[in-house]
Image (cartoon, rainbow, N blue to C red; front, side, top):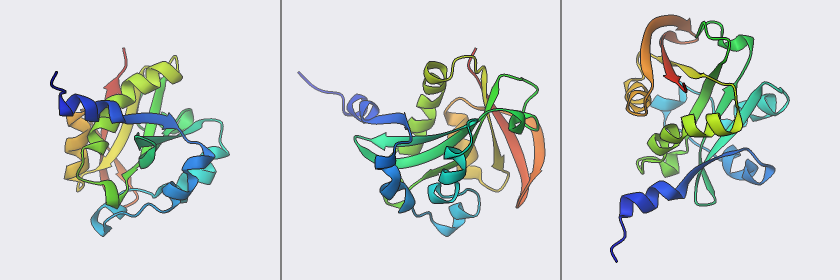
Length: 168
């Protein structure tokens, strides 16, 4: 019986809430300079997210290896991004330089809706902001089901497109 390699790879990538056992790998993450300007490394946001009941750090795992990371953030922080009171903000998305180019970012984002629906009931929408100069990330999010809402906002280093993924 022939095994479909793509299907096997799909099963390898999972999303999990952060655990202390992920700490060393996450704090060792590196990004190419062109990506680092657009996002925060896990080590830069982890403690704040762990100390805020409205933030949920999420690890993208390939097998047992942390390869990616993002934070889901509930509450008033979503107001500039959505009129939906049941929205959640996805931020600080990154994939470690050593693991880039293997499809982990795309598979992680493709799994985000199911992960949120399973673990955070009541959330109806995932929103995010992506810098207008970060075309690679914008294409990744759109290929994963996010749609450009047409809204923009000023971010720390330029204009950002607001993207949304409906869970309804």
